[in-house]
Image (cartoon, rainbow, N blue to C red; front, side, top):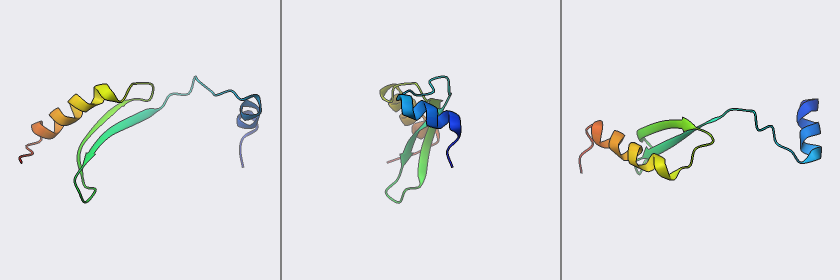
Length: 64
């Protein structure tokens, strides 16, 4: 069941922009095992997360 406030927002076509969220930049191997994870705010762009994700992989000792 959806809360009444969510229904009223959906009917008006609006989004609750005050809600905070989070995202993760994940790098996994061929089997889906995580190699590096970087948390970031939900409102951030994905492209700046590539560098820190790859640096985390190198810092953790990954070798070719």
